[in-house]
Amino acid sequence: MKQLVALLLGLAFSVCVNAQPVPLGTAANFGVLAGSAVTNTGASIVTGDLGVSPGSAVSGFPPGIVNGSIDVADATAAQAQIDLTAAYLNAQGRAPGTVVAGDIGGQTLTPGTYTSSSTLGITGNLTLNGAGVYIFQIASGLTTASASQVILSGGATADNVFWQVGSSATLGTGSSFSGNILAQASITVTTGATLNGRALARTGAVTLDTNGVASPAGPGVPGSPAPSSLILVAIGLVSAALYLGRGRLLQAFRRI
Amino acid sequence: MMSPPAGVLLDASNTGWAGNNYAPAKSTARQVIVAITAMALLACYAPTLRGMFQQWSSDEDMSHGFLVPIVVLWIVWRERARWRTLPAEPSRWGFVILAAGAGMQFIAALGAGLFAGSLAFLVSVTGAVLSIGGFAWLRALAFPLLLTFFMLPKLALVYNQVTLPLQLLASRIAAGILTTAGIGVIREGNILDVAGHRVSVLEACNGIRYLLSLGFMAVVFAYLADTKPWMRIALLVAAVPIAILANALRVAAAGWLPSLDASTPHAISGAILFVLCLATLVIVRRLLNKVYASYQS
Image (cartoon, rainbow over all chains, first blue to last red):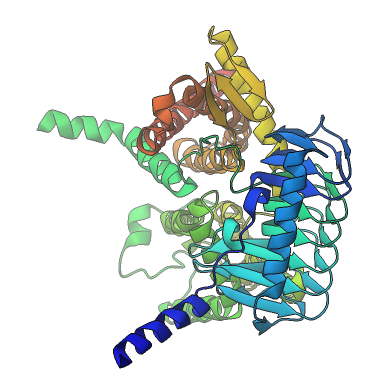
């Protein structure tokens, strides 16, 4: 019996330590989801569905491109908004975690829940290191500085990073952000910023300006990345050495 | 200035500074100063260097950064006969540049980011060379110092601005290649649909990886194969269209042959294509040399 209790306590502890992802429901299919409007300027690329509900204003596609479907005030978008509300409340209702305040740029964080009682900023690089779930509970706004980056390393994935924002989120010019933004009001992605994740706004608008928004779910289309630059340069150095030393190599072969 | 024969310089009894009346004791003292300066720079910039290592480890576009310092140090060693013969004439300007590097590092620490810190490191290295060896040394080591720019981290502001246009450019050119080859393709933004097989030109497929790797190799190859310094710039410029075209060709091949989408064939085809890019650079160099020779005659 004691062993069973210990086992159950152990299991409960492990569940507490390894937080579960926030269930996004059908909102997971969306790269961009807004409550009132989606406005785009420039050649933005949204990978994943784009939706608006209960509002119905979508502008800027084209020149923007959506690699997915566009759902404007239809049943799909409405259901996604219902699921977003549930996800938002789920993230907000999690037990408060490590307290963070002000600007968390320059820090390296491990999986867990992070709670901010007011506005949170990111200047420079924020590194999320390690596989697991990251939940940021932000009571007010989220603002990232120009050229700031949220770097995922050590097995961290954008799908498991959740930013519950009490008001609005603004991603700075040319910044690179990762994770799912669940904002109560609006989300503004300024010029040239990239979002490796989802921009999900409950009541307000999502504003884009020449951005790349890549939902981790996406439309399931395979990509074709090149080999890493380390492999390419290594191949290049070996090729250059073989080419420049071909005379000696030929001589050696002849001798053999 | 005529360089002494390499054999003299590499003689074990001649510990550097040959031909300039420097006593071995003075040379040893100079070597100690160089070693202390190097250690001080490494200590001062340890967090920046750690950040650079982290980016090289986590970002496949920048992982060539591990090889850049090795190649740079090899070039410095290869050129030792040249810079060892130069007189060491420390310049006060070196301290000015060191101070500028320190200022940049301070700004980087305040929040300007890893790129500013890394640039500060290179500026400080330049200042140290000038402080110890003077302008003659700086000139002699200019090429390896410039080559270190390839190990700088991504400047996010620039990278994020060029990513999307490059993705779309690769998609357009790949669609053009397939159409020219008589293969039907429908392009929707950055997605190619070839007879129902869809390939997405993701951020990682934008060609930056080919561009940086081929640019670095173009400069190194020009240095090894050619004595004309302008050839390095010429091949670097030539590497840009070659890399963009090669990347588009790679994407087109992945669209045309679905089997190439599997990870191993895809990596092999990417590597083979890169070797072809290098072969193209060899041809470009030969053509440029022919044009140069006819111009000279």
